[in-house]
Length: 261
Image 1 (cartoon, one colour):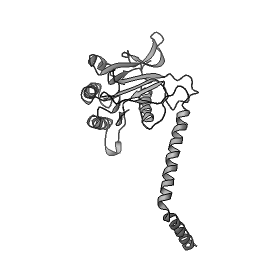
Image 2 (tube, rainbow, N blue to C red):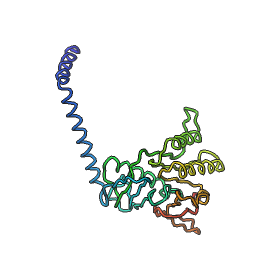
Image 3 (spheres, rainbow, N blue to C red):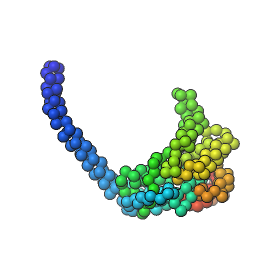
């Protein structure tokens, strides 16, 4: 029984094989169509506002989105607060982002990365306008996790990933650094964060975000032409220790992280 099935399927495959190149072309065309139709459907399902990105060929890198929303938040969610992103171009390349815990820093970082990917694969973007120079890569260092099976501490993993970014990022990269320096003591952590931020802003020339709870960095780099202080807006009522998150990206430095609140 098995032999008969094997022989029959062999003959069947042989007939297919005689028109191999035709089948291959057909499959590739269908795959391309499938991809384009999926892109079109995804673009049309973004709701309003959405737009086609405009790509620039300027010497300075730029990534600008006006009123950007997160594409995974469906259009019928009315309470998502959009934000405008300005990196590079006429603005400084790096946004030094501070803000309370849970104020929306990571959402801003991920939202920007996803928007750049969507722009470069040919999709529409959930914002009013999008202007950018093509990015050669998106490099990110987020959170603190160890690799215990390879005997690598959180600090070791963090420094390895950060070193890779420092050695491979170019002036056309989008670099996202979140909480650099948290895998060690505060004193060492600030030193690491300060050195990394200085190198990224002064020598690499990429655009991106540097999110941190080390608020001393903002005074350290207050005069740097390529670093703009940004914070996530919150409203604090000190007597009741109540924090209201406004989820809005604005100029300035956060007062604190409000973890105890």
